[in-house]
Amino acid sequence: MNQTLNRPSSLLRVAGLTLALAFFTQVAAANVEEPRAMLESVSKQLLTELKTEQAQVHAKPQRLFEVVDQVLAPHVDLETMSRWVLGKYWRTATPEQRTRFTAEFRTLMVRFYVSALLDDPKQIDTILAHADTIIVFLPAAADSDPKKTIVRSEVHIPNGPVVPVIFNLHNKNGVWQIFDVNVDGISLVTNYRNSFSQQVAQMGLDGLIDDLAARNKLLLEKNGVDKAKSKP
Picture 1 (cartoon, one colour):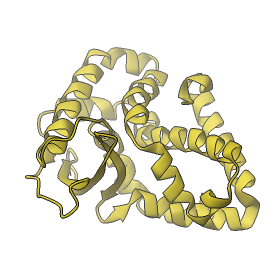
Picture 2 (picture 1 turned 180 degrees about the vertical axis):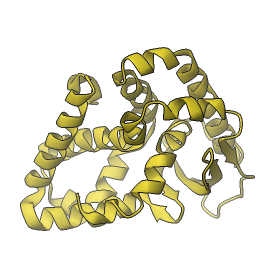
Picture 3 (picture 1 turned 90 degrees about the vertical axis):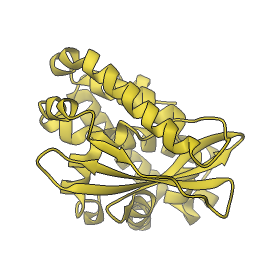
């Protein structure tokens, strides 16, 4: 991967799972407070599930992949994110390339947000011990576009900094979905778009997809995850 991704890695990876705890879900649109309330609710639900499976996660790290994947992937607008991170290359991609890229990007997202905990699974104990205070959602504000909104939050890393996190959501077909997340001023979509653009220029779109597939496969196999379960 391009070094652009490595610059914020120490901060983003530490905040990784805490973001995933509140990262993706959907809800019928009603008012400006609903996306914030929804994220709070999902955060609590996932923390509860991880507490219940804490021992199993320690015994089998792949369970962490499965839990996060089940919550993260189905509720994000993956097509929109995939289209934006590929930029102009999405427009010229074949349907097969789009499908392959979206599948690998989904796995990459899960990999990114649990990588720090896979390196040291004991970090999950610290996160869960501070479950009640680790994520604070700030009051919502109306947007000029009723179909878009942002939810501001703060991730209080135990024994670490307070990281500002902004979730970008849009209302698609009557439900709120996240299409980007900004961590301490760094946009996930922009960060990956810059890196992928350089890779496509060097190796072509198929080369990028193959590279992502190889990296994802190695990590998933290392942690005993069935690749088939990580595809849409």
